[in-house]
Length: 51
Image (cartoon, rainbow, N blue to C red; front, side, top):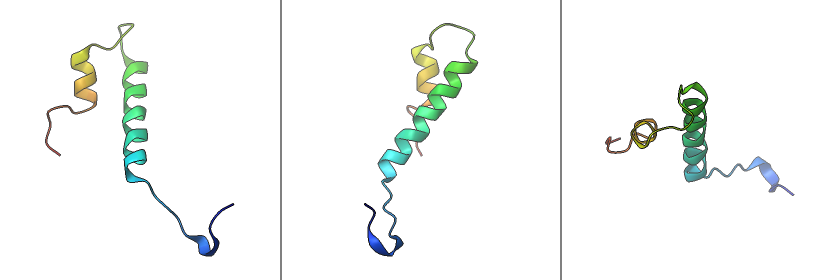
């Protein structure tokens, strides 16, 4: 049952995780190799990049 009055609750952490999963799926589907290297995973997830 949804709350009355059309209230929408957003979980920004969950949305960010879904976005990152999508980025990983895209990277994996376009990769030439069978598995992504740790460097490629870090690149996709922007590890070490200040946001």
